[in-house]
Length: 210
Image 1 (cartoon, rainbow, N blue to C red):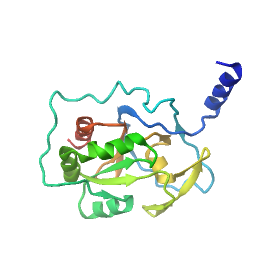
Image 2 (cartoon, one colour):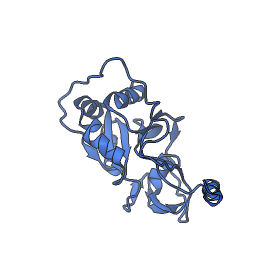
Image 3 (cartoon, rainbow, N blue to C red):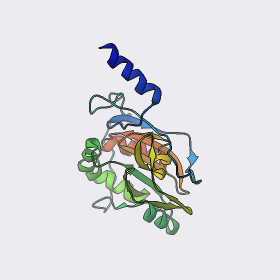
Image 4 (tube, one colour):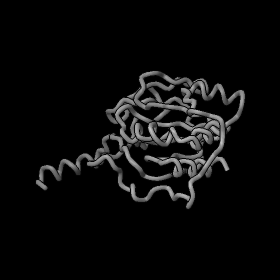
């Protein structure tokens, strides 16, 4: 590697420019913490993310441990009912459920792969239908999101435009796909990161629900 290129990589590391990852990093449950409710101001914020030279993130070989047999969930649901964040919160006022938030982008190939496989699995569909309100949230959206009397807008985080609420929910550690789990009181319980097949996702979700 040329010295100039090496110095450039070091500079990038020092300044921690925001990027995104797209791949499988297994489940990374975090310590329960409430969603931030205070407004962060109208200036620029900061967020961290990782870049990879391939489409697969480091740790892809350390996937969520799977049970010996395929998890099966019976039910009548034929497809996941995807909601926007505000609709899910409104529904939760009427009937309490966990909230499953799919953080995706239009360019994330692993996100699209899950849409075409994991989220088409009947057991995944029925388990989410029975226990969760399912939300699709694109952090790059320009649409403001109202939550608990705060309007979360698109802001600049280390040079990249993202919605404040999405950045808060991922604790400013951006990667795709990521799945945020809120409990019935809308308190964040954890984040599942990276591509998940049906069994991996079901096992991870059961840990929060059961």
